[in-house]
Length: 74
Image (tube, rainbow, N blue to C red; front, side, top):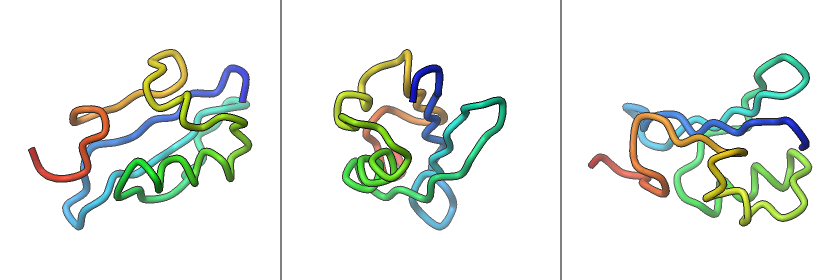
């Protein structure tokens, strides 16, 4: 996961936040998360060894269009 950046996008109209991973020069969709647990599961599946440590690491994960750990309309 070295050099990769996870992006948690704004809340979708249908609920949940799209999660993408940028690595090796392209963007990959990991899924639509509805909570921190979903995000952790996606990160594990992408090969992140300690996914919980990434959630608040601004160098590795970017929260867009809403507050970090926010999964409903603000």
